[in-house]
Image 1 (cartoon, rainbow, N blue to C red):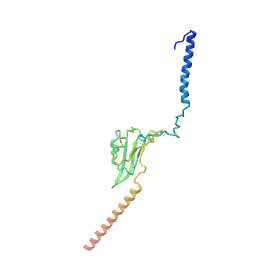
Image 2: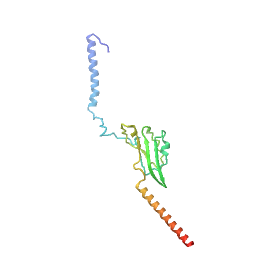
Image 3: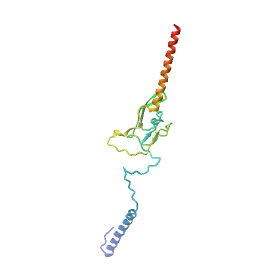
Image 4: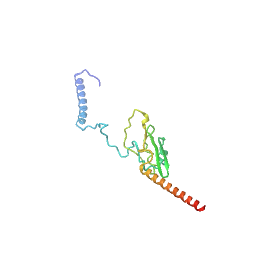
Length: 176
């Protein structure tokens, strides 16, 4: 705005200043009477949409270690290692490197057992980058039910072997 020296220009400048101040105060007053929308973050959280792509979680009991999720990952941030004992799996590791992960959800869809999912957790605060490599396993080795099934199978196998050995010794005795 240009300053004018005439008395009418002076009054016009004052009127424009008062008018712009009143417009600003009207906007401020409108928000002054509303409920605040501030969220006290660590204590309160906003609701997360159902399709939100957060930190992964694994339903380990369902997983068959088919490596479909690792093959589908475009940046190879999923690594899994397990040892098969017949139909049972002994888990060693199932890691996901979140330094690389772009949360594309491409690892979720090819899983035939629907055991890897995107969660709603999103807080990734750390001082050390090595903490971004997460192990998604809830337990290492085999679960309790699988261990019991393995022990039963080994006991049956040992009983069959002992039964077969005793039959072989009986047939040797009868042949002599």
